[in-house]
Image (cartoon, rainbow, N blue to C red):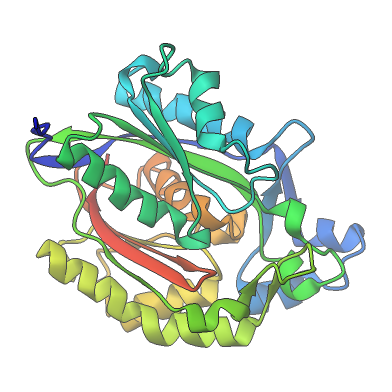
Length: 323
């Protein structure tokens, strides 16, 4: 039995994003009939605006747009990819999976020789999928993996429930993961707590996301700093060596609370994309990383600590080299 040699290490080769054109401010939500106001939303979430998908924006189409940009950034074409992974929890028709449709739209694996599957770890999906992609490259199961995180949460929002509808936005981001001679994606620190599954999700017999916000806030701010520290320990990285901390953009108070708990030095840039983008579930970590890179706030090849968490409850963290 032959065993493929794989690669010594894996890293992110390129990053791309797609944000729907429809930017919706808190005041816009109020004008649409949401029983709230800008001051209330900002005080509780730190969110000023979010992007909402238009009629032509699906989980698949947004993923295709982000994936095309990631391939271009990596200097590759779809033909160079042999595995496509879609991290999402909001695809409307999950059979067939969205990953295969994204691969087909891009022209990947025209002969059929491209693996494709969806991964649902809710808001934790990107960091889960990034670990899977890195492992596939190192094990030799794939040479280059196209990882897409795409969410259309607006399909699952009850606009009369202001505790949830003000939080979420739509969007997609993608990365290409490929071989590297040096470590580019650190070991994952992940886990789950099914006992908290009822805290956030779509309940049986319902159609919209419901959430016990205070309970999720307490869990995130008391339990997840340890996960981030563990990811740094596994990678052998000290906080002073980090260029950025990119946590899931669930709530600005959670982001700031985690940064404080980790006692990060002032030199570490903390992603706060949630202010303008809201919570985009699996897409939030790569979208936030993309925003920092586009703004020129990160050094090339620096280290970023990623931390994703959400419904399930799921969580995952790893240190990566910034593409």
